[in-house]
Length: 308
Ligand code: PYC
Image (cartoon, rainbow, N blue to C red; front, side):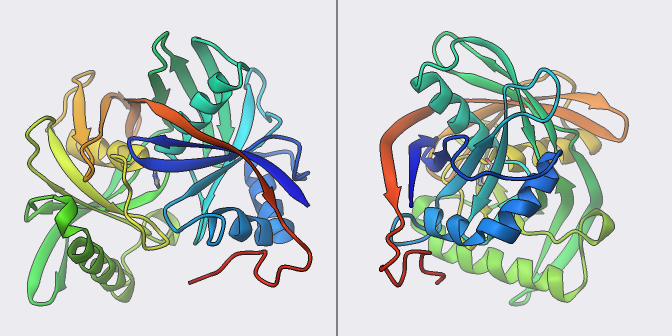
């Protein structure tokens, strides 16, 4: 079995796009198709993103036919730990991949995801602005204690569930990623231990630390579900953060908010208030890094990837 994929990175965070029509998913909605992917092809999920073909940093994006009228395509995001509701850097990577293939140019398009339809504008220079689904602060000022230090943060939704730590602030730097990974894993475990969840008991699987930035409004470190940190500023994390700031009266409608990542890349966002939350936009740029054919050799005992 072979799969054609295109790799890109968005602000340093990789996306591996699996071109449409190669894994025939059943379902009328993207959520049904995601469930079919999980039930029948989860070995491909693992084989596509995990070692030896990938790593815990890669986010996969499987393209499908659209489900909503007017949409260009459907997309299901996944990683080493499972499936993501939405993915901001991944959406920008998908759009750059479609542009690289000559399937789209500048202009507007819509993509269907398991959590809703995303609107996209592609500029002549390849910059992508995505309009995300409704994002909102679910719980304000939740405290957790780890190693004798109390952290304060908000539980917020931006297409995935986040605990956004607002104090203390951190000096975010690449040299500190091991320390921040350990800390955010402990914070996430503590949230789970205390039974703190998103709406309807949803698991909080991303933790975002923020601190001052020399070039943007803030700099972040985002722990992703599988234990890797986001090399990009995290589109869903920036959406969640902006929703929390707006709910706290700290971010006004249409005011550009610049989020720097731990690697120094930047997304610019805005919010438009809506009932019970905001509609965020996120602007960023991706670059294609490889066109490849993945081979799943029936005689390879680890063809479905290593789960480390
Ligand atoms: O950009 O939304 C994002 C994202 C989620 C996980 C990794 N990147």
